[in-house]
Length: 240
Image (cartoon, rainbow, N blue to C red; front, side, top):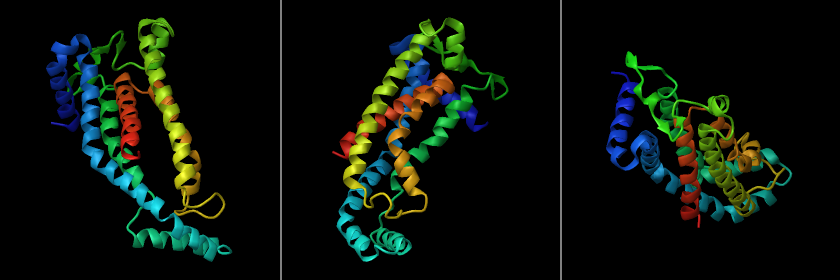
């Protein structure tokens, strides 16, 4: 039995469990519940990332001293900052772990709702819907079936509104966080090679979710929307 068959059975059982409450949208509710379970599993890592962020903020005075000491030697500054983080057991990339560990769950959902067959039989999950939109469909399918204001199109419009609100909130919060906790100003060197470019793009990453929701199957889009909303709320709680 493949991992996809096991996963399909899990989603089907969750849908059956939720059917008395959600009726025809039970499979969509099961995906939201599955996403919440995944986020609960990685929550300890999110808490560790928050502690790491506070630790990096606490190191700012010492990094400022290093910046003065090695003002004329960017390479030595970069090495000294890396050495300081290693000595204090603080990783500049620790905040990436919760997101990376969610990728397998996302790709499982993507594959599950992109395949017409699972385990040698027809994929019955593709018959499930979120209101008028099939969970295996994409935004392009909704546009061709009824247009932007068709039944399926309205489902996507609702998702886009949620994503836009969450992305805007995350964008503003990320800008504030970077302004107050960035250990090195632009042009003074990077803590990790290539990290500077990532840092500059970071505030805009939340808006890429709009593209993801538009091109992946609706089931995977639900995972993305639920997870990004969870992340926004979680960061408010952990970084308050």
